[in-house]
Image: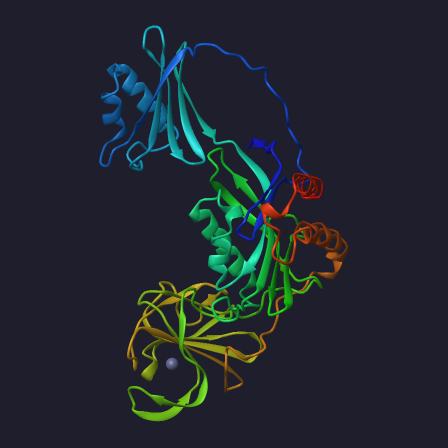
Length: 439
Ligand SMILES: [Zn+2]
């Protein structure tokens, strides 16, 4: 894969109380060079066609001033890389013709934002190749205050405005995943909470993001700073997140078995039951969610029970380490391939929200037990994941320092707006991020 590094390093200061800088990623070979600029009349005429709904590639080529032999050759070359029968509507097809006689010289067919089949006429006929879209890697920094929910704070961060909505959503999802054990973003965010993070992203020429990796993030929640630092001791891309002391941010249990949910009833020793019309204890948490919402195993474990379980309707019970069990009720259906005795992993979908058994509406009833005693899942102190292994401690310290430096250059309080800075100050800040931004 060819990688381009951006030549422009910039800090944009914006009036919305958030800022970001884009710096070159570290430790990568920089290939920079300029070709002499030349002006010439292009030798070819380029036209761009789009596959209409229901239209085949063959039909499109038929209507594009080509001989039958050319059409066959292009289709044949294309089929070496992909199936002409399975193409998306809207697929872009670029036709390049010679300026002098209008004959077809090359065809580019976009398979995905990352891959294009390029078919070029050569002396002996047609040749095709799969071309990977060139990408570059950069590091993006962002910081801001959270006034209501993380989503609005990050999505509304003007410094990330150049990213697509989908890319921003992906980023927010990562933050939510990384901090899920420390903070419940739907309940615990206080006004004035602050975030700052740095992530490395792979960007296509059109500015869309192919992937992003959160390098370091900090959330100041009710005055307490929580950090998550990426560490990958084996360098295989399968690293995870640790706090500043090298302790895993992961817990053996997810704090919630659903991604999108609203708590409709908490754990209590006595509540008035809406259907039974009498007071009784509620030994679990109810999460209101749409029917069909996926339900995840909150920890690695084994399926102990799966089936009708009295008032819980379709339910699953899992056995975990250290004497813990969890129970999930009122499911509309079970995930396929989940049977008694099967192993499940944390986050694996085991079933879907429904209202089987005794339920007034679609919701998940979730219970946690240990040694036969019901626990409040929201109050229990969950066992942690493994810390940084001892033999990797030296590399961890170096890696931690480098990653923390990325976010520590960002202000913890609301940053200055562009109007507050003189040109020299803006220049100096720009320079500082440029020189310190990459490690
Ligand atoms: Zn319940």
